[in-house]
Structure formats: structure tokens, C-alpha cells
Image (tube, rainbow, N blue to C red; front, side, top):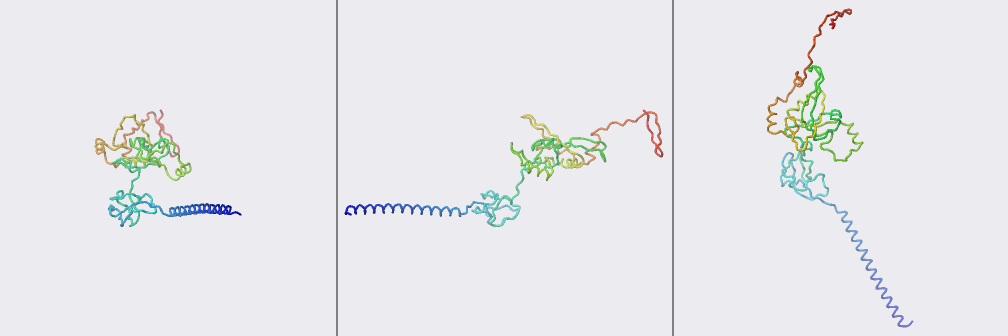
Amino acid sequence: MSSNTLKIVALVAVLLAAVLAVIGYRYSRSFAEKAEQAQKAEAERQQVKQTLAVVAVKPLLAYKPIARDAVALVPVTIVPKDPYTSIDQVVDKVPLIDIDAGAPVTGRYFNESSLLARAIPEGYKAVSVEVTDVIAVGGFIRPGDVVDVMLFLRGGQSINDEQARVLLEGVRVLAYQEQVIDRPEGAEDDPKEKKSRASSRQRTAVLAVADRDITRLMLGASAGELRLALNGVKPDGATATITADSGLPLDDAAAKAAERERSRQISLRQLAKPGTVTPPPEVTPTGPKVQIIRGADSAVIVVQ
């Protein structure tokens, strides 16, 4: 083999070695980068996420306002339910139970009124009455409707005749069954849950009753049968008349009129006092009388 051929073979071998070295270097760098990325991803997965929450730095006593220096905003690894994320949200709030130092301050420690409680007008109480579809206008009553409470009294004891009367007028419905507000349009209950609720509890309607009429409603419910009469919706722009018996806050005139009313106490005899329903006049039969004797019994009848 000539010297030129040997030189060419040697040059090709050197070039091939250089190419293989470059390829090997690149492969090694690629493997190193992939290994580094895998280690970083694993470290990120193992790292626990933290969230800022208000935590008590000293014991907080029940029924005592929370001072600003008694709480701090610190990162926590486990996010509590209903946490506070700002110190201003808890300062001067009064917890219902003691809170240990280091415990997250959450909404369950405080008294938050229900949606129904916020819907009760001043001077009124929410009173529930047991209802059926017949009593509650076929079940078409909805929260926010205004109804009249009708009372049917059966005769007997201190009531001479059966009577029907309006017990309360213009009473607002705060809740019906389990609804405080109407369901969204198109929302449907699970049939199984609906059947379970229907069989597990009685249906009720919660009414906004004036303080002075609560005893009247309770006495009427125990003495007779209640019915709810639904009032129609007034035309647009019409204003409802505010009276002492309505489910609306009283204005000055209505409040003064309510003060002139009698005591809240009312007896069954007063509830069914004579004169509300006038009995028909008694007619004394006239004509010849005949005495009928049946053994030891005798009776006198009038022949007309």
C-alpha cells in the first residue's frame, strides 16, 4: 500500500473519530439535561403547596373581640375549610368558642345568621305552619308571595256554630318547604332525594307574622283548620298598602295604629266571639199538640 493511501486512510479515521466524539458528547449532554429536568420535576411534585391564612398566635377566648395582635397571616400547608385570608376580616369579630393558639381562624367559629333570618322584617317573627297541597293553594305558593290565613272553626265546646274567617291578612311567605328562594329555571331535584325528603319530614310554610299576632296564629292553628289564600300580583307601579297585618315593615302611621291595638293575648272565646256569624232566628212551631206514649216514654209533637 502506498504512502498516499495510508495518509488518506489515517485522515478518514481521524475524521470518523472526531464525528463519533461529537455525537457521543451531544448524547451525553442530552441525557444529563433530561436527568436534571426529571430531578427538578420530582422535587416540584414533592414540594408541598402553601396558602396564606389567618392563624391565632395566642389563645382567643369565646365571646371576646379578637385583637389585631392576637392573629397573624401565615403560610399553611393544609388549607382549612372557609379560611380568612386577611387580618382585617377577623379583627373585632367575636368567636362563639375558644380558639387555641396556632389554629387557623375559620368561619365556623363565628355566628353567621341564616338566609331566612336576614329575610325577616323588623317587628316580625318567622312562624312555620304545617301545610298540604290543599292548604297551600295546590302547592303553587312560592317564597315572597303574600297570602291571607283563613281559619275554619268547628262547632262544639265554647263555639256554637261552625265558622270560617280571615285570621291574618297580607302575610308574606318567607319560605315554602325547604326553599327560601326560588330554584333556578330548569333545575330539577333528584327523584330519589325528593321522595326521601317527602317521606322523612312534614311540609311547612314559614310566614312573617307580626309580633302581636303570633299568639293569635298559634291559638287558631290549635283550635281549627288553616288555609292559605294567595293574593294576586299588583300591576306594575302599584304600591302595596302597609298595614299592621302585612308582611312588610311598618311605616309611622301603621306603627301608631298597631300600638292602639289590643293585647296580643286572645282567648278561644274571643277568637270565636258571638256576633261574627249571626245564627238564624229560632222559629217556634205552632199548631195543635198531640201526646205520643211509647211504654214509659212520652213525647209531645206539634201537628202543622
